Length: 379
Image (cartoon, rainbow, N blue to C red; front, side, top):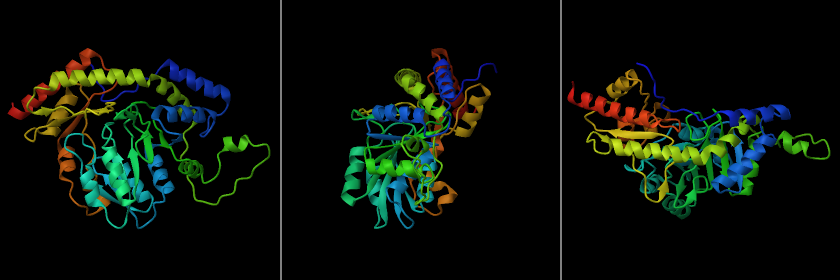
């Protein structure tokens, strides 16, 4: 085996190094500083919201979302089942109970009818998930939320640059949360963001993410010597200004990264579309998919584990899609979500990032086809 084709890979270089050097020269490396503020302003504009707050992760942003929306012990929050369990974890961090709702078999986003069926007198809100970046059905979800007096949160961990009916991901709910993890569309290695149009929520989130007090930058701008008073339990959920500088450079790259990954996705679609044992992902016509991941669905007759091992042996990295959360033991006994469970069993993520060459894309596709054919026939 010679070349290994990476599953995911950040696109970073001189612009990010120059941004880091600028932060080093400023002397403010900690979180919540002037560079973080600059990124927050630009990110809010990019996602179409009035406010953005950088955080240590998407998980911490989700936790802040639930706290600022008033979630408390004894409450229930309906959560899209097909997602990394950080979504469900965040509900538990707030002391509430996640109630998982099944997803659509085509877009893999939460089914609004399943959400409505999961609502009980204890339900206070809904968390939709943009599956691998493709936005959920937010008009329908908003109608359900308004009918029952619930909040709506968009877990946009994977969806920077996506759109829904012409509106950017992040602007589709009361609060949205993003991830800047290393496999995401734009990345600082780790990190996240909380975005909203509501000033009251943004102000509360900013306080909670700095131990429950005003941040040092805000205090430094005052003419006296304010001594913070701790009146509410807060957390250290800040993103360092070093990471914020990287994100400023990444935000400049976003249009080119999206365009490249859309070309890669289109090419995969051409190469794989006619294979009876491989189903390519569906992009809804009223949405723009950012292709954070490229996930195929294998036929039930194909042993996914065998396929994955064979791909890796031939230099093609891969992994499963994401989790059917209701199957995780942590959450105890839950209602079945059969569509999510089926996707969890049959999804396979293959290399997707903006550094892939045309030759690599063709190698991945032809290798996948060969391995699946061999696995299905038992040769």
